[in-house]
Length: 318
Image (cartoon, rainbow, N blue to C red; front, side, top):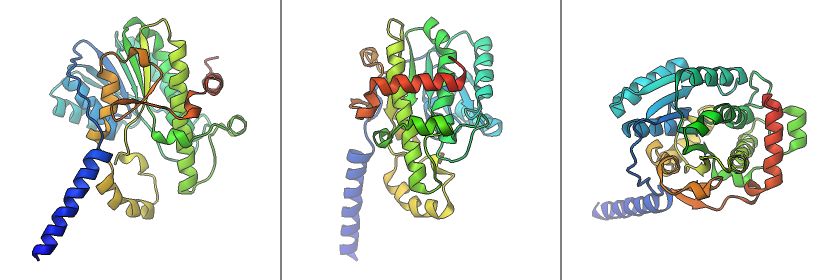
């Protein structure tokens, strides 16, 4: 029995070292306060987004929870207020799968709120299907919805500079591609309902996030708005809630042991929001609260410019 205890303790010790050194990553060290600042966090009813919102509300920010579901958004509103001790938290409905909803949200926000200091494009989806505008679901929600939202709010961000746009991407962008021929024909980033096919499409959408950030930084030169993309770590959130039951059952044990909780997953987002001196790195990519080298496709000027132009056409901005 004693041998089993010793072996168990050793295994646990090794696991904790591996988790804390290799998996958990760094923490945001900023003590910045945000009194008088206004923040939008998309997808903030759960996971990384909700954790980010709680932290920023604790720092004194006025936080707008931009979520699709009114029921879940209002539940998150109560929780964020309770956990942060702040009354300066507001729920506003935003469905990134609807260009009309994005425009309605922006119009409502601009009429109601005089400031915008941080726009955190956090929401993401791992789901096949079509948006109401006929776009591939992951392309529409993970990229196009945020592309339109950011552009509609850019003037307010410029007025309130220095301000920042934070795009939550993924290390999977390095495996992503953008097939403009397929995109032109199908308004989507790929096809297939298998897990591997969906993972590829998700990776493609995360490359779009990185390319969007790269091109946005170029267009923001000379303003007081900067932008950053990031990998939050591999986080145990509701992103994959649309997987099949057997896939979730197979992944659950590993998820509990190896994936970050939302608090750990929010740290790089918070770093990009709060850390002083990041302005020279606008357009760059962060992971584990540090500047990282983006994949080669993610810094391709021609690819980023072409994606921007296609996105403008699809959103009616051009």
